[in-house]
Amino acid sequence: MTGETDDDLCFLSAATAARRFRNGTLTPLALTEALLARIARLNDTLHAYLLVDAEGARAAAEAATRAFAAGHDPGPMSGIPVGLKDNIETSGLRTTAHSRVLLDHVPDRDAEVVRRLKAGGAVMLGKLACLEFAHGAPSPDQAFLPARNPWNTGHGFTGGSSTGSAAAVAAGLAPVALGTDTGGSIRNPAALCATAGLMPTYGRVSRRGIVPYSFSLDHCGPLAWTVEDCAIALGVIAGFDAEDPASRDDPLPDFTAAIGRPVAGMRVGVLRHFFEEDSDADSEQIAALDRALEILRGLGAEISSTRVSPLGIYHDAKTVIGEAEFYAAHGHDWRRRASDFGASLRHRIMEGALISADDYLQASRARRQLIAEMDHQFENFDALITLSVPYPAPVMPRDGGKAAARPGTRRPNFNQPFNVCAVPALSVFSGFNDDGLPLGLQIAGPACGEVTILALGHALETAMGPRPRPAL
Image (cartoon, rainbow, N blue to C red; front, side):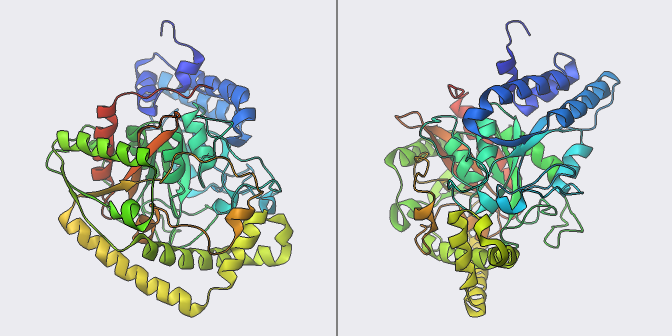
């Protein structure tokens, strides 16, 4: 298109790129080349990618370009470049989970989500940074540098644990990325980097081939510049997988049907007590949430406050279950080669070793009660809204992760309740603070209620209008 630069191409949404592939004004190869050039230029600053598969990406993009030219159309993600969090296994391509423990790990089989993307013609750009095993904190003894926040590379932490996924999307290094979420690891970095991030219903997306953190809390989902792109990606990666024992065999809706769906009459409950009583939050975050609620009210949504259990109850249940299951997954390596783990994670793994069977069972019983309580909320509300994060992007930790490593000191977060209750939640951009750092909120729905939360997120995103690119 006239006057269009390669950087302009890099910020096309997946939906827009797909339309242009089909009308002949853009090819998958041209988009992929533009993204590879931008990655080459910016990744030394952002450290979003741990590995770039330029050869594989070009081959897949050329195949998609030929398919469109021949009139073949494998599906909505055909030709769309995607980045993968590096705890998602890729056949013949190193998968490290950002850890020295897996530096030599080259899987011989793709994770199910990667298989589905490739079958749909998507282009795999490479592997993205994360927190170590999706759980540690940045520390100088780790194998790779931590990803930087594109909105302030000198200041900015991206949150965790899908750090590179959020940074890559925000910086125009991938239109779509996959992340994982055990206690906010998609929604937290999405909020801090001004992207959309969707944690689907537990079991909606296969976790086969994803390095585990917590067997009963892990989810996989998309991060993208727009809610619509999250809906498109979810439609490709979702579905039953007999090799994942937690996989749901439910009928799949058309997730993109949410895009443009009216929200008038939707009942929305606001969980204000999370940040007004149970924890705290930055005043600019709360003000942005209130502005967003007024937008939704103006679109006809019915907004009222509601309450669930205190945030700390969810935190305790998630921590006991998550730490015990993390130790079950990784304790063997820790006992044999603890020095290969980063300083932060070495300490965190010990928490799981100290959790008793009684602790785990009591937390599991509490979880069942919390799920029942949350299910009751969705008898009265179509969706629940609260903050995604309490504060804008913090300064990158400079103490080697030691502060984050102290057992028992981690504070509750606003994302954990929806992991504990196994329901879907979507983080949506809600504005910038006075320092130009992104703000975000999250919208949660009942199990298999992704269409509703996507509709609300898209309506809010559309009403707020386009947001600027980070000035890199």
